Image (tube, chains in turn brown, cyan):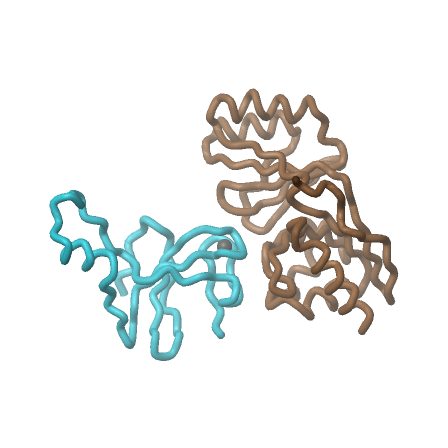
Length: 181
Length: 91
Ligand SMILES: [Zn+2]
């Protein structure tokens, strides 16, 4: 049986760093290449899927993250059932692309504060020097050997996605690293 | 350790990638007509050059796309990176 409970993640405060679990939140994986796919997805979500690598687009509370040349993650509190149904009937069923609900696959942890990149740099080989100065940038990389998607949605405010089965382990690691700030 | 420039994501550490062996090995058009030796040759035999080698890499912990790399195996210097389906740069 799938364990639908989220790992025990509670709000934590460290010097210039605040950690929060942002769940439950809808997350969709969209894949497609054709012009029709882009137009339909854009119209239904009221957001253009960003074609530029490592970037994101946010309108109201919905964000679309570039994951690869033909793959995006869309997440937000305001993704309603109707929107999912439209994506399904107008993209998936017409074979324009694929739409997968990955809400339960990823856990979203928000990290905010001046020390966000101090902590992330402890466990990742990614060069955050430019990344931390730009808003609406995305990176998929390894953090403490665990796959993560990082969305820098505002300066010193990062949405971190981690696969659910790794989330507790990574959460403990983040807390451990943060306690040495 | 070395840095690889993913043709989609840009510069990343080698740890984000997985190596996929020699590039540009063409699958035989009529596998059923091959002898066991010829099939084994296609499946297993690789050049394993000490020096400049054409390789496939996958950005496993990033965009998950495959691409080609020209790498000197003796010093890990990367001479070129190009996408799947593209011809290797001539110089
Ligand atoms: Zn990549």
